[in-house]
Length: 261
Ligand code: GLY
Image 1 (tube, rainbow, N blue to C red):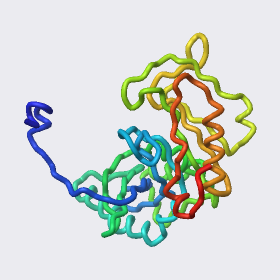
Image 2 (cartoon, rainbow, N blue to C red):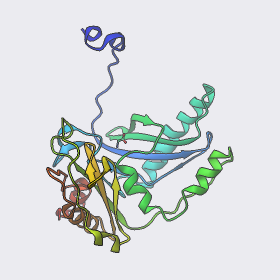
Image 3 (spheres, rainbow, N blue to C red):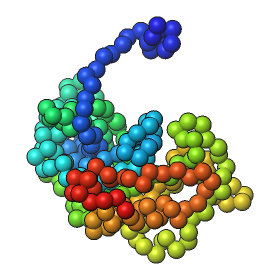
């Protein structure tokens, strides 16, 4: 059955353990031997409020996450990232660059959901604005084959929320070419950012050209304030059928008994 549906790819079926828990996105810079973890973030993969409905490429992300304690991150680094780098080196596939581990925090500890050799989207839109030190410095060291042993990144004490603005119908079929209006005054706030994803420039101006169209990132002293600012920025942008989640960061807010804006 799987072969008739999936062709040769269906010849082998892998049955994996169903993991329950909260997912973290952990980016690790690696020189092939040593790793330096970046600030963990949490993606919201489902289209609907409260993590309901079909999966998407990611509808929003926030950081920092209180359950990503130093002890947990040490465990992720020692038991997942470092053994992976050693195994790749042993396999003659030494990995230098950015390793993205999707980690499930289960009752029996952190477990790997997936690895990617790239930054995550939309997690990067919230993680990098919280980076106070240079990203270029370690990247240059890594690109030059130098060591990042003992390297530390500096992170802001603030919180960030990224909200993805998607086309009507996404993650199913959606229209393209719809005009987008972005308020001009948003640039007055250096802690309010808009990232383009599925947009293009037409002769009449900016238009939609993808499922996930834009992402708004807001940085503030608290997650609740960042959430409100991201929401306001998302509401101020206009295109026909715009849909976005108004509950990005809801798990963290409910951990601190803080209501959504
Ligand atoms: N946020 C999921 C990904 O980048 O794969």
